[in-house]
Image (cartoon, rainbow, N blue to C red):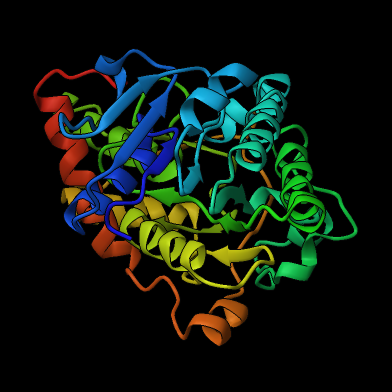
Length: 328
C-alpha cells in the first residue's frame, strides 16, 4: 500500500539512494532511509523522507530502524569493488551482523516483507575460471566455494534468510546482484567498481592530456554489468512477488574489461595507451548471469544495454570531476 512504511537500509548508498528516489516517484508516502554515514555523505537525500543515521551492525539500531515497517530492503553492507573486497575480507564478513540483527528485528516486529541483496560473488569459483564462462545459474552456488570473505558472508546470509522464513515465517526475498553501476554512486577512492573506475580514468586522461590508462589484470576477464534502473525494478518486482528462492538479477550482456574500456573510450572520443597491472586485484576470470529463471518467473530480465547505461554514467562522472566534487 502507498502508505505502508518502507525502510531502506543502506539508504545513503548507491543502490539505496536510487531505491528511495524511485519509490518517491511512485507515490509512496512513508519512506525511511537508514545509513551509518553522516547525511552529507549520502549519495541522495530527500527532505520528505525519514532519514535515520544508525549503524545496523548494532542490534538495538535495527529495532529502531524497523519500528513500524511493513517492507524492508536490506541493501546495507561494507563493500566496494574488487580492490576493496580482496583487501578487506574481515570488514566484508562483519556485514553478517547487519543481516542477522535485521532479521531478528523483522521477526520480532512483524515486518511483512524482507528483501536481502546478495551477490554473484556467492557462485562457485570453479565455474568462473574461463573468460568464456557459461552463464551462472542459481544452482551454481553449490557446492559452496564463493569469493573469499565477501562471497562467504553473502552465501551465509542467504541461508539465514531461508531459515528465518522457514522457522519464523519472515517473508524473505533474496536477489543475487551482478555488478550494478550507474550515476549517483562511488567513482573514486578505492570502493568504486569497474564501470565507474574506467569512466573516471578515461575522463582524467582526456583532461590531463596524458593519454594512458591502467587496467587491472590482462583485460581479458569477462563480466556482465547491470544498470541501476534495472536493479531497482527487478528488486521491487521480486520483493512484491511470492517467489522466495534466491534469483539472479543481472544483465546477460557479457563483455571483457578490454571491451568495457573500448566503450568508455568511444563515449569519450579518445584512444588511450593501455598499461596492464597484472598484480592488481582482478577477481574471477569470467562471470555472467543466466537469466532463464527470472524470465520464467517474471517474464522479464534487465535489458539496458551497456553502451546506453555507460553513457549516462560517464556523463555524470564527467560533471562530478569538472565541478571538483569528491566521491562520497
